[in-house]
View 1: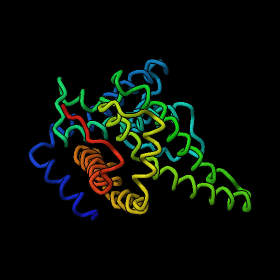
View 2: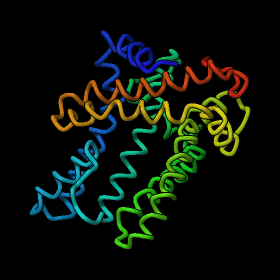
View 3: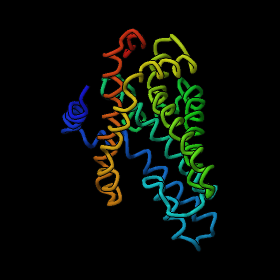
Length: 251
């Protein structure tokens, strides 16, 4: 498996289809940002528009620079990750050509449909807890404790990489009626065996695009590009280990 091939395939699929891809991957985030802004303005009685702007922007750029996260910061972070998970699944169905009635926006919100939302919510909670634990070392000032927590964080990061494909797998299992949450987690770990470092480096390779997202406009290409590349990574894993995940049902 080569990273350049995954990225090239994603770029080719986006050529001439960037508008549709933006509706799948970006529009759900834009809608969430607008809702957050409106709610924030109402709750602050329209006298803290700057705060509302800051909160809404966190949907696209979650780093606030604050030493401590507020409840609002954390809630927005969870919402952003949930929407990103859904759009990632949407891009997988888009790549496969799976028919979904309605607009591309509906494809981007596929994880919130009754068929998937229950199981994906549990898997999402598991991954969110792992991610939150990874942030603990940043809050410690004791050197020995920091060292122990860093070792734990590395271990949990490996676990998180191992479970990274569980969302895609759960959708496939549900479509084929061949398993549920636990099986999705187990199969993800088996599927990622030997490929955790590959995915880690693949994620790092998008740092430049993540920085460019600060300028807003690149978001409309960067998000679809990244999400589609990760979907193709999953498809390639299935090709390498076809015995793990059953043939998908795209009809």
